[in-house]
Image (cartoon, rainbow, N blue to C red; front, side, top):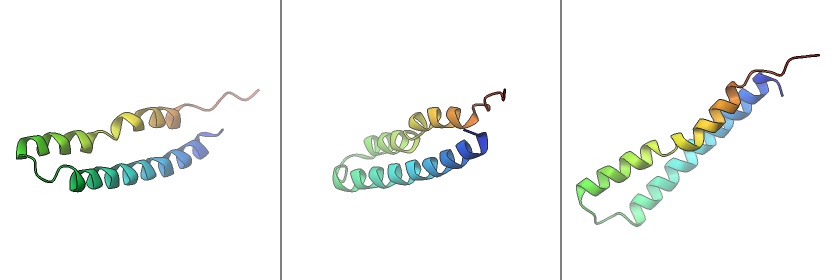
Length: 71
């Protein structure tokens, strides 16, 4: 698969990943974490805000993989 197609697919997948992750994090925060103290809430928001990076790393490395040499 050419790198241009991989980057297009990866970009769309990253946008979907970040959108779904953000919606799930907000839903969880509003439903479960309504009456907790501020320190625990801050930890949750830091983890939820940076948590999408781990699933995105393999996708970004796949996007950056060079094209296979032509024979």
